[in-house]
Image (cartoon, rainbow, N blue to C red; front, side, top):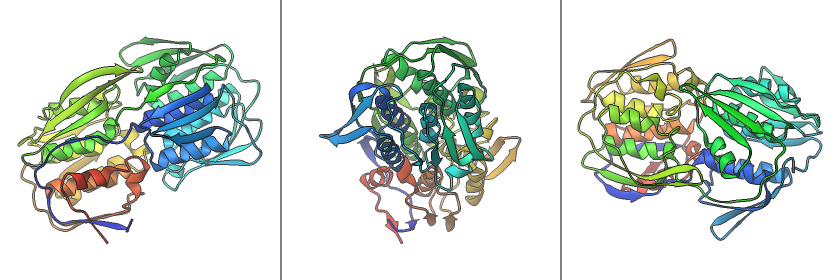
Length: 443
């Protein structure tokens, strides 16, 4: 694909029913769990993005047979610690913080040095947050400033640990949970609320796990060294990917959309609660539960007005990947919106809080950044903007997609760089926009 996307006009009204790609968080976890199971697992609707491609290539390097056959992926698991370790093995995680951190939890028994690397963006992110607890299990690490590339050397004498996860990071929590699978005895985790897909997988696979929930933390107890059988899994659509088309519809005129078979896990739908507080009327129908995950169809239609809010901090962890797109609705809202305690946004693929503020400034929206919080002074009449160029955002897929939605709804001429960035998480993003009737221009 060529380097720049040109958008010269708003999208016309549409009324469509769509599917978005499979859930990225669950896709990565399904492959990792299948690699540790006994037997052949069959996975349908797997997201096939660059992040997932890197996951599959890495698991194959570790001796796991994976093939695609008749609309499903077959993963031939070798049981716990069933990887075939080789000397001087290198694993490339690309842009995926989820895969890079979770695979480390499964490598804690490697007898050889394994190097984990990533792209330029991932190499700027903090890995000390996962190195420290995995060291307690007995693994050893070599890393400069706690960043990629890093080397891990495991131990055959792994021990269970007690771990306090205070960041609200599902990646850190999940990596420790995967390490606990290969540990004798009981690992105890006291985790700040975050996505619970790994817990749901453990329950689905009948891995010994106990969870006691409180308002802010979950106490998780895992009994290790218990093999589990292969499984069949049909992955629901990704709510974070759905959020872009929800906001596109909200900010467009005389439009409606139904997004089918979306994961509505309570730890993933904070953005729906936030948008509804701002005046959206997002509806969920055809609700069901499959393999421990809640699924529904999402229906949304255009809204003429929105109101600024002081966003409750309790929604932060359940909307952390959607704040950029939420900021666009705040830009169109009447009044001031305040979002607080968002320091974790700056630890993503790019410093998203800072870049999100800069994006709003480019379209004439006043913002104030202070103490990991942002105030957005909405303008309901924002329209037909001047020429705007978006570049130098570390190829962050969510910045790219947010910019596209802004261009399609606020008007003006937009020149958006790094047009391959979305392929890491949502490869059908631009084709769905095309299916809504918009002809895209590249140069």
